[in-house]
Image 1 (cartoon, rainbow, N blue to C red):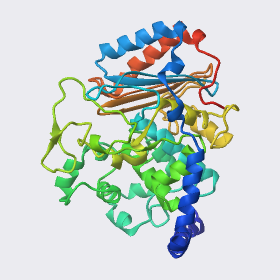
Image 2 (spheres, rainbow, N blue to C red):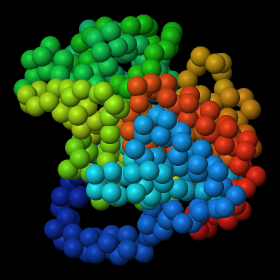
Image 3 (cartoon, rainbow, N blue to C red):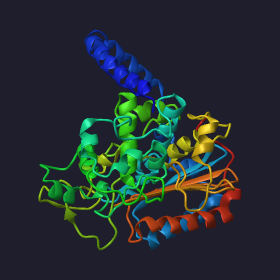
Image 4 (tube, one colour):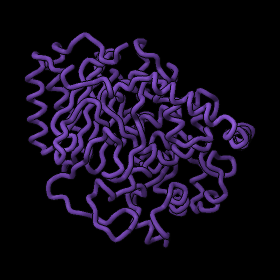
Length: 432
C-alpha cells in the first residue's frame, strides 16, 4: 500500500475519534433517536418466516428424507433454506432449536455458521478494495504494511512474514502452519507457552504467533489458515476505524438485507434471543475451558474462544439471511449486489482444483460454488449450482466426521435436488 494512503487512513481515524468525542454529548440523543427510528422501520427477514410457509405437499417426502438424515447422524436440529435465481423459495427448520426447553427449530433461528464467516470477511475486503482503501497486493506486516504496529513488527522472527499480502491471506497462502496447533483453537497452549495471564485477545494472539516460523514461503504453497482470516479482520478494523463487526454490518450485511447477523458469544447463557442451543456428538467428553479457568466445559460452550474467531468463524445467522447475503455477492441481477461485478468475478475465479478461491472453498468453471463451516456443535454448507439454485443448511449438533460431514450434506442436497427441485414454488419469501 502506498504510504500516503495508509497515513491518510490513520489520520482519518484520529480525526474521526476527535470529532466523535467532541460532538457525542451534543448529538448523542438525536443520533440515538434517529437510529432507533430507522431500525423500527426495517423488518428482519427472520421475524417474518415460519415453517408453515414452506409446508408444501409435493415436498413432504423431501422433509421425510431430511428428517431421516438428521436421525441417522443424531443431529438435534437443522435449518434449510433454498434460493432460486435470488428468490427465497424454501425456508424450514427441522428438529429442535433447544430440546431441553422443547423449542422447535424455525427458519428464523440463528446458528453459528463457523467458517462460512470467511465468505463474509472476503466480501468486506473486496468492498475495501473497491473503495480504494487497499489492494490485494498490499503487504500486511512491516513498516510499509497495513498492520505496521511496532509491537507486531518487533515480534517477527521470520522475515518472510513481511512478504505476506492480503491475497495470500485470502487464499490461505500466507505460510502459517498448524505445527503448534491452530492458534485460534489452542488458547490453553498459548497461555502456557507464552506465560500469559489469561486467554489472549486478538492483538496478543497475533503478537505471539508472529514469533513463530512460517511453514512455507508466502505464495509458494497453501495451508488452510483460520489465523489468516483473523488478520484480515484486523486489517478491516485498522482501515475502517471501526470494529470488524460494525464495519461488516454497516457496509456488507445491512445493505444486503441481512439485519440479524452477529458475532457469536461463547456460552449458552450469552446466546441471542432467537439463537439455538448447540450439542456435541454422542460420546464427547468435557474439556478444559479455553481461558484455563480450571473448569471443565462442553467443547461447544467454552472449549474455544468462538467470539475471538472474529472474521474467521464467529458469525451467527439464519440460512435464509445467508441466502440473502449470497444473492448480494453472486453477480445476478435480481438482487442488487454489495460488491461490483469485477469483485464477484475475482472472488469466483477458477485457477485449478488446489487453489482456494477468495472466501469460497471452491468455485468450479461451470459455476458451482461451495463454502463449508464446522465448529464443535455445528456444521454449515453453502452450495450454489449452475442452474441458479443455492442450498444452505446449518445444524446445531456436531458429528464425529467433523469437517468431512459436509460431503454427506452435499450428497443429501444432490439427491433432494434430483427428486424435488421441480416442486419448489415460484414465490419469493424475501418479499421483494
